[in-house]
Image 1 (cartoon, rainbow, N blue to C red):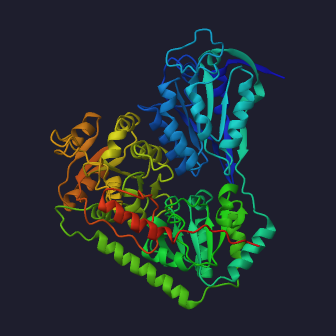
Image 2: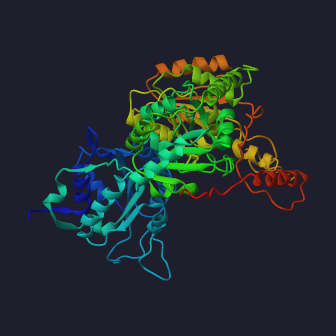
Image 3: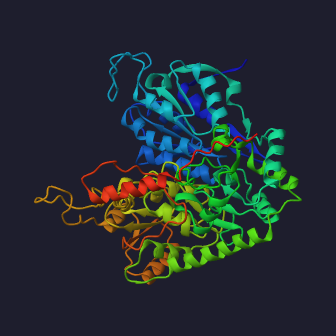
Length: 625
């Protein structure tokens, strides 16, 4: 067997460069390059190896969490067929990645992490930034990645790298198992040389399979659907990752089954398709939630049934409701005691569609769906209509942006009140136009996420929507977008605090305690003094962005036009009114526990409401036999 002598770090990069994936007719390199911030734990190892391999592009970031967010957004846009490597030093560099790694795993998105680690020889311990544990010398901060990684390893000897890299690729390219993969690389081991088998560095193609569910379970699902009077479809992110949009649309049209959408599945159908009832659950539309309440069969495609989607398990009120879960992941396929169709969405839906050739819901049900769809479009138009153009609310800004964007443009959002409003109101015209990180709903995701989206498809205009609190978490990546010349347009909505949680606090009787950006009041001792004065425009300008500060809806539209013509990252700072919030519809509850006892009357009142909502909550345990 031929051997090639390389350091562990050099061998790592040589291997990664030659990993490809294939699905259908498409074959592409799996890794688009490497994000990194260097420190003493990786600069002499992976840093040197990356310098030797300029064809494996190195990208510089300002925050370790941000670079993993960028990688996750990129791979989401690529339907998980391509991603980035992320490397950091040991210590704070490593732990900074933990939050974003959790988000990648929660959202089923492949990212490969190489945090530096302490010396394997322990010759100089304790190192700078090394965590010492009194019960073991084999624990570092990188052990924090274990519960949030789909595969985790530590390379203490060079030859261990061979099996670790192969296992990493197995997990990363598995639609069912993918998520964050962490391989901790000790300082010294990164720089050690070893005679690796040359075959490790030849081109390797990983087939991204399209497995099918058990045929008996498919037959059971078909029989169940044929008996349904009021079936519905939930389109999740898996429908888009598998490329099942057109087949799902055909199923909806041919069989008369309405489609509702999760955050990740929004855009599966064009917003104006008459069978599309829009968002479901805690942030659902009137029509989607009404249909869900009565549904006798729920066909879910690629969703994990998060609490917002299920309205904290209160959305489906029909006692005889049966679930059919089409999902590549076994964990999700079995939820709600469903008929579990574990397999690829595109291929399985094609079989279901063919076998339902003689099935269609009755005209009365279809007419109701069409009417609810039409009614919701009217509600959206009303929400978009400005009441006071000089003092817009968030919904009106969303409307102005929705009217402005092109058919191929993308909006990016993650945290605060924006995801809920956008889930209801955004009129999506393409399957990648609505980019929502709502599995982890991580504040600070928005800007690096926008960069990842732009890197994945530079020809699209990318609009990042971000509240002031989220902006303050991670504005540094504006500089990264400018350095790499990936232009995004950031719409920074200032409502002087944690507005979303402030509203939630008010709904549970907390009166927004601790959520406003105010000075501490010397008289009360609380944070209820004057508003803090933050100049977001100057902050963004200092990082190199072009900045506009429109004072009306007309000026906002004008700023959007200027931003589109710009070639560099542009920030539009706007203020909104915090009142006139959107209403919830039907079973749009989200469970947030309220204290059983309290000195505050508003809390006691909120507890009464909470207990009423709890009565509708269910465990879906109907046997599927």
